[in-house]
Length: 173
Image (cartoon, rainbow, N blue to C red):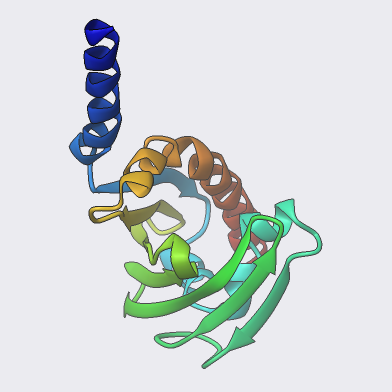
């Protein structure tokens, strides 16, 4: 009986301690080369309406509700979303012209990840786009466990979004 009690105690202690040994943050990154100049890609990524042309969640959920707010483009450009995969908002917080766009995503109790698009001109007519999102879980054990699955959850969506961005940028260049 003592052996079973000891084994159960060790198991419970492990289940409580192990999540705290996992990383407190996770970054998901995908990259693609787009056949369009960086200023064309930047114009899409840095605007409310432009983002919607390659928003992978909009492509996956035809009933996704998008409400645009703030300026049409630039810092403060924002949209709220409500669909089958969740609700929240996304706001541009900083820009470097034709180089990068950073966005704060607010998912309520699910967290506030930071999304960044880094653009690198390749010659005059191509752009390497790196789409990354960093999620911080702090001391939340459930978040740390969730982080183990984040790449598999977001990665395919980013790959779809980058394909759609390539199509939109080609159309607009």
